[in-house]
Amino acid sequence: MKQNISIGDRVKIYPRGKKRIYTAEFSFEGKHCRKSLNTINKKVAIQRATQLSAKLSSGDFQKVIEQTSVSDAKKLYLNQLAFDGSARSTLERYGGELETFIQFCHIKRIRNLAQIKPLHFDEYRMLRAKTHAATTVYHESMVIKQFLNWCVSRHLLKESPLQGIKIPSVKSSCRRLVPTLEQVYQILEALPASQKIMLVILAFTGIRSGELKRIRKEDVDLKNNWIHIISREGAETKTRESRKIPIHPVLRSYLLHYKSPSGPWYLAARASPRYPDGDHHINPKSLKERVQATARQCGIPVGQKSDGLVLHSFRHFFETHCVNSGIPQKAIDSWMGHKSDRSMGAVYYQLSDNQSQKFIQEINFDSPQEDQ
Image 1 (tube, one colour):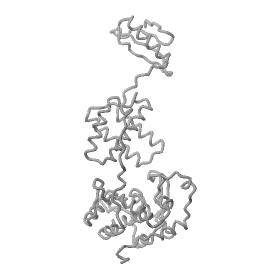
Image 2 (spheres, one colour):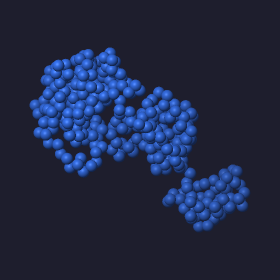
Image 3 (tube, one colour):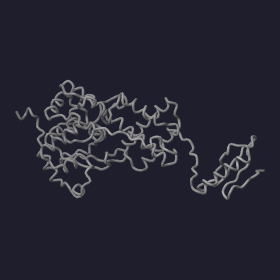
Image 4 (cartoon, rainbow, N blue to C red):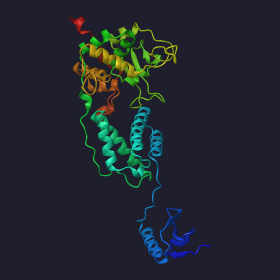
């Protein structure tokens, strides 16, 4: 039978187990709690229990947070992001970046969140900086910091080890090489037909490579002269909104001569043992490698580290060429799916179908060689 001793009106203590170590029992946030006082001395136990009772009364008591593994916390975090509506691409990227950090923690024998120290974070960033661009390291660092803050907000961690640590911002790498119209045609002429049609669509619509990958046959409307970028469940666009882009005459001439393969996709990868009918969607990474190899042969610098050409450069090309052609920025933003402008003009502006088709006709995408 317990030999309970009441300490105030909230705490009771008693000796417990073979070693008769004093333990305190109390209620906190509606839950029954038990806390070892780490002593067999009754007088010391009463002193410690009195301090505990005072903290409970003043609201200064904080329950010791159970240790949560970094891996389990990552799963909970991604599940919460998914529930809150984060795009699939965001979940994949955050999941990959956090998994890389978890692997680093494993090497350092860090299993639980509470074991992460600021110096571990510094070491991880320096390690990543050896093989990755500064913007990549910055983004990964912010994801980890955001993740740890979330763990604190969910009481998985008492305090973030990165609290008070400022991560220096870096200049965006968006000012990498933007190809000229002549360079676009140089690359196009050297590409095989299967990759040429893909690059033509990227260059003359400004869509993202992930959007190119998900274009279905019904999304290309040659009759009404539109390419529809549809945000579908499980294949959402970056802004989670659908849009349509008028087809430029140069692009139209390519599309009219293009025969779409079997299957649902407008563009498909080559037949393979896994997909013998060639009805699988394209792999943007393979397209990037082929385009960069071709660009290199044309004497065009490639790669992020050398501020060279990457697949996303053709999106920059489209916007730059449209701006230089005098097309209103709000029309270009509508085509490209930009949502960064929060001005009232952007809220109220509506681009009509007729005006959109008129604007696309005003852009000169003809080959420079044909103009000579």
